[in-house]
Every structure is written in C-alpha cells, then in structure tokens.
Length: 137
Image (cartoon, rainbow, N blue to C red; front, top):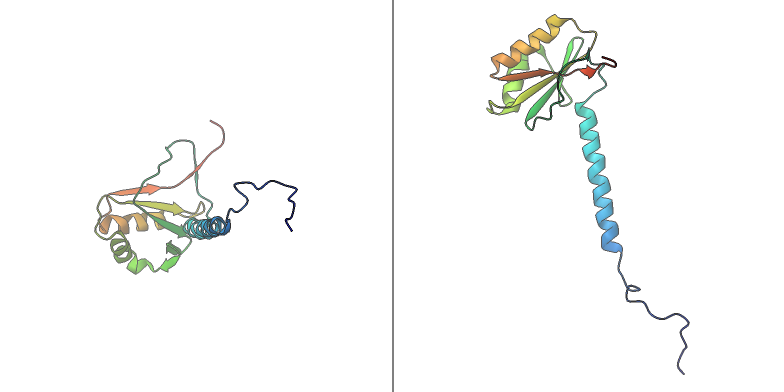
C-alpha cells in the first residue's frame, strides 16, 4: 500500500544544521574570550580629560596601567624596580613598538614620570598617554 503525502518534498528538507550550530558556538566562545582579554587590558581607570589629541589605533602596542602605587601590565602587577626589565622583555627588542600609558586621573605626575623614564631606559621610542575626550569645546 502506498502512502499519500500531503506536502510535496522540498529540496532543503534534508539540510543538516549541526555544522552551522558548531560554527556559531565556536564564534560565541571566541568573542567571549576576546572580550575578556580586552576588558583585562583596559581596567576601570578614570583617565584624565583632554579636549585635544587624536585617536590612535597602533598595531604593536603595550598597554601599561598606572594606579596609585601600582603598575599593571597585561593583568600582572609589576614592582617599580623591575619595570624597565619587564617592558624590555615584553617588547622583545621591537624598537618601533608603542607603549600606551593609562594613568588614573588622581595620580601625581611624579608617578607617571617614573614609568615614562623606565620606558625610555628600556629603549621605547614612542610613549603615548591615554586620555578621555572632554565634552564641549
């Protein structure tokens, strides 16, 4: 006995969506990891405000966060005595790399100057200070 079908067969009725779900899951995990790494590099620091300056997207850069009494590079707290060696080691002899200093708004300039001096002694040619854009003119 032959069965009667009420709906005609579609050419896409046998599409396997399992590989598509796998790809979507891998992408979700990738973006979660990248988001976490980006959040770690940009810790919650209230940066000084500035009405001048340009937004820069340098390829090779080392982000150094400066908090009162603490220097943090890529999530690791670095003692002041070892800062120069740590910067030199992380840049790996690339003189064209950029160091981005993210200092807290309430810091005295002397603490930032010590980090700038350590970067210069480590052979860094370009040190940039990160600020937040001030509202208004």
